Length: 587
Image (cartoon, rainbow, N blue to C red; front, side, top):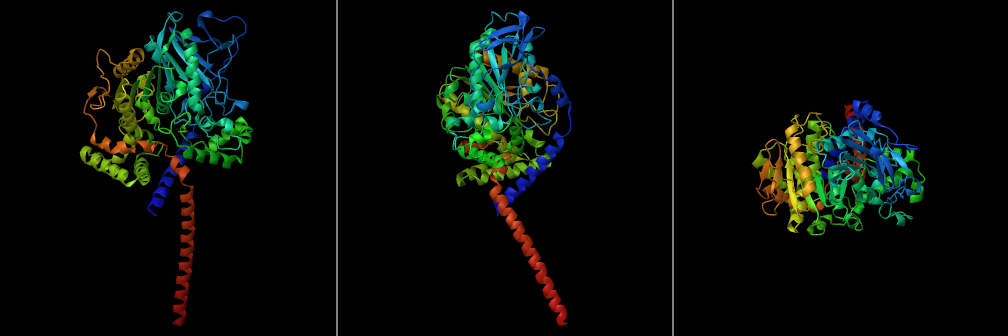
């Protein structure tokens, strides 16, 4: 009964949050107007074109645009588009070509639900979304060999894209012309992470649960083959990302297919914990089959692009992360940090108040506080007795020692973000891999959000677009952090003349605190993290809608119980009335 009550309360909170978000998404926003104004289709160029704006790659000649010393090439296809018979198939490279094409506009965003808070979702969407963008300094481009940074956008593997102004690389390269920046689109949600292998004709779709990751691999192959033409050094590539982008970076460092395609990796608030089991993934497959009536992959292939968009709107929020299938992604991806990827330099970190990013999604502070308490209870119910004891000790210790008002929020921060980051760093450093760790503590101007999930991205990418508040980031801190990232991409060491950043050690756990008053923390393993460590293999992800995916059985019980209660109440009313009537007649 207790478990049922917790599930019902969470369902009520999540349903209320979904209603509020739906109401908000119907309101036109300046961001939507901005994204519509950005849209355009790159065309084939017949005739003359400015040679100074053109770069010859293996799959074509691409003509970009110039802004002062910045050359921008947008919407370059890095693979055959996954349309028609190629839907749910592993991406393949475009054939070599001398075709001349514009590279003025971002490629289509992957199919996703529209949200007023996500610029890429308001841009033109399509299945033909496998494109990338390159920003490079014009001076000396033909002869330069600059370090390359490949940015992988976040969005829980279900939304966002390179058209989002928060993920652009133009201002970063203007400030740091010594680096070439690339950003990539990849398939999301139902088209990028839907396991079809269990269907009768699913043998040829063995990797359909991880297509988005394989898209990224194909993009990195394109970069390795072609980036020298843009002034980049194909032997010095750093992949970086935030949230699901950081999870992607961690997975790319953990799979055979991506080895040799990059030298360094930056993971901002994401890890291999952002993965799903085969069992979890099959629940999404069942939802898709139930929603469409399909029995086979062939049935799903017959759906039109509009059908796919409508399907995504219907069941796309019951999403899965990349699949620990045991083929592409190991069932224990943490194990790959025990030496498999020791040759990759890594910079790993998180923010102090990650979970507070979802305050708005939960409907405000009060609903967020209730949701986090209930989410904590939901997590604890899935643990064994020893793990439950550790979770309880974490709350007691955190509350008593730090005197925080919401220890459950701290628990979620550490369990879903900081803990997995430390787990990867510990293993990588212990196996001899060069490792650097950070904790971002600079809060937003609105105190309610603190240093929430994504609050460092605008500093790193120099976009000037802070999440939540739209405040202007502190320029001095932004410049220092960007130089750290550039130094790491260039040499494998993020230290600057102003701040020495020592490598992470397994005992001291050296961590750079990134804030206005940044400095190195060598306090070692905290007591509360000892309570979190045994829970790492639970792969508990920050997907609140997962509860809805696991709740139908409990919902059925709840409905049955409600009906039974109603019938009992009706029976009692009639019983009382009959007794009252009988007593009245007897008098």
